Image (cartoon, rainbow, N blue to C red; front, side):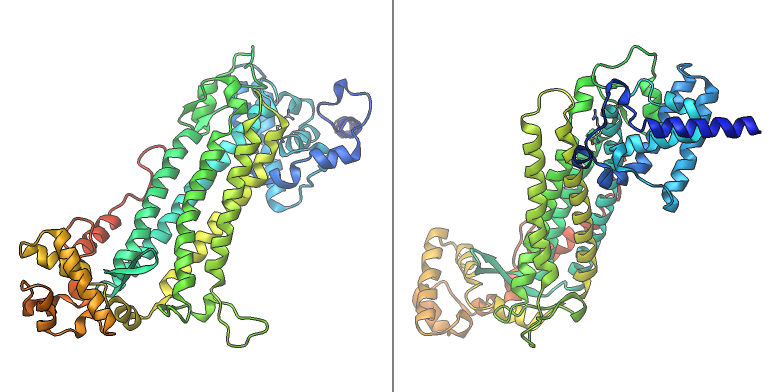
Amino acid sequence: MREKAKNKKDRRKTAKAKTKLWGGRFAARTAKTVETFTESISFDKRLWKYDIEGSMAHARMLGRQGIIPERDSRAIIRGLERIAGRIASGEFVFREELEDIHMNIESALIEDIGPAGGKLHTARSRNDQIALDLRLYLRDETKEVIGLIREFHAALLEAAEKRMGDVMPGYTHMQRAQPVLLSHHLLAYAAMLERDVERFCEALKRTNTMPLGACALAGTGLPVDRAYVARLLGFEGVTANSMDSVSDRDFVIEFLSNASVLMMHISRLSEEIVLWSTAEFDFIELPDAFATGSSMMPQKKNPDVAELARGKTGRVYGNLMGMLTIMKGLPLTYNRDLQEDKPLLFDTVDTVKSVLRVFTEMLPVIRFKTERLKAASGGFSTATDLAEYLVKKGMPFREAHGVVGRLVLYAAGGGKTLEALGLEEFRRFSPLFDSAVFDLLSPEKSVSVKKSLGSTAPAMVKRQLRQAKKRPRTCRRNS
Ligand code: ARG
């Protein structure tokens, strides 16, 4: 018993004297400024669970292959479990002088179980270890982001279903163009999000390959079983080239790129929310819970959530540009520059998740001012329907376009809308007009005469909604 306690004490002493796991070839200490400059523990500690999960699988494989004794493999795994418990409970102290999450955990393991802990890093380098941790992390986060997009998508479908039949002006060039169903407008965003999900699912396939065994860059002479580790960790397969394995970050770039496209979509919706809530548009009212006030102007109610989402889109784009720029000049294989990937990636993950959550909550409580939307849909927005009416009576479209254009010019000159014109005024422009024309001039009629697939006709919009509801809940493969 006494002997055991003494051994433990000795081990602690040696561990203290030589904190750096790579200290062998160094005679002098690292400068404090360098430790602070090079550390990543302040941000990569977020990867602890994945680092431990990966190490456990690696230790199991080492034992199974007889590269280390089974007994040591078991001791390592139990030690890692204890460390996981200490980190989860918050009692684990992360140390800057141990640089990163990998060495913090490995040092704690050696401190805990003694020299057997020093066998964990057999046939492994931090280069393949960080590639593994990042892939495990991003695999989980991608699935979570996909789940959150789907929740937001469901909120859009619900809003679209609730407003079925309400009309609003559709715009091109920010000029009123043709009436559309509000549901159709909302479902346009649902369609964008569906593609976003597909993109994330697609990227997940490439993220889900296992890099461990690449070691520093060249692989190892020890008889590792990479496929076994991949199976233990639920990967689709192993990476093909050890040099690529440690230096590739395209899976990070793909995530950032997909996040940028997603944010671009949300930013466009944000812009509309900002516009629609102005007194000039007055299409929606945000509930108090989702608006903020001004510290000076008592009357203000600002759409800050939408504005911030629009602003954060710039930040996410910046992270993508940052990562592309970090990578562009890097020779093979691992370079420390790659450590800079993490703050950009983590920030993007956090930003995208927070934006999706708040939008999923906000969307259902936006009040659409149905009457205002309808009133704004009239005017000249039905001019295209009038031209199509003439086409149906046999007039070439180009001619019909001219007739209705002159009609609009005439009405606008007299300060009237199309609805306000009498039949004989219509007939002055073409004898093909008859009293059925009045039936065409309401925005509801305008949407209901649409026939094409994917159009704003109520039947087509309902069909879109039905199809959108049927979208699969998970990625087709690999998830
Ligand atoms: N903290 C490092 C990173 O994030 C881990 C890999 C370090 N490898 C090395 N040889 N210094 O990239």
